[in-house]
Length: 223
Image (cartoon, rainbow, N blue to C red; front, side, top):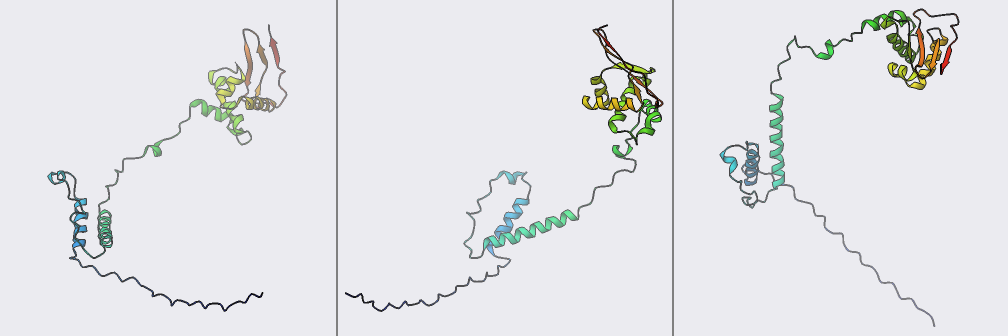
């Protein structure tokens, strides 16, 4: 038995469909009912909401909308753009506010940083070392100066936490800074107390940098 293949049916191609182009929008006249309606709506929106006319409820827009064949959205867009352009022109033509009086000066311009007498005296003694010392070292030196020479004494008894708080430096960094200042001859620590009645370290601030080794520190424990 043999399978005989019949001829394939021919596929008829359909003719291409017609290309429908949308109609061009018709020009809308100035006296068109839709244009007049939208112009009245925009003008009524600009009017103030106070007064007797504002208390009366406005008629719904859809109730008075005429059966127009023109494009209402296009009309509304044109009227809205015209109203916005007129508002922008009015704002640009507004007068600028009068300038402030000449004798009025901002507080930021007249604000001056007035240093205390102690800071100026500290700068006369240690200002020359600022290019060679770090900011933390200068802060510790100024804190020690306020504790000693600013009060008329050459040395003071304090602890590392109190010195760190006065200098605005962390306690761990204060330990390193004090050691560096002592090695460079700016301060001395002659005594350290850890007794029931006295705790802390004696700091001696030198106004003139020492170039020779300083005295050894004495430790007091329980006596």
